Length: 172
Image (cartoon, rainbow, N blue to C red; front, side, top):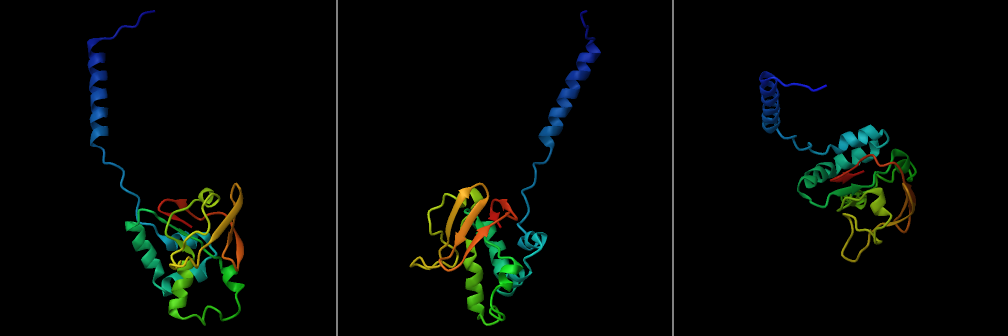
């Protein structure tokens, strides 16, 4: 059976196609994603109260969020849980000077964005924000594939699990 198109149907189809194309052309482009809110990321994780307090007290929270806007390499934050801080000797954090607290935070931040997969293939040691010219304060990564990555400072070794965020420019 042959179908027939009336002139009014053709005009309607042409007009509809034209209007849809115009609407799409005039639609605003999606807005760029907002600033990274590190506090919200850590709060959602639910076990980072001590780290958040350190980040705020040392003003590194503001510093990291500000640098994320201008750093083309991104950052990776290795976020110790409250349990990790509780395993320290009682009062250990209180005994640190302000400069030592800043250094502690910077030791947990790399000046580059890494996914879990990236960490399995990096060249060790990986530089942190606390790494000095002699190469001290680097991190070493090993793993067997998948999401199992071990991290070692040379003194402490732990396993990385379940990233809170793995989206450029920040991995946590």
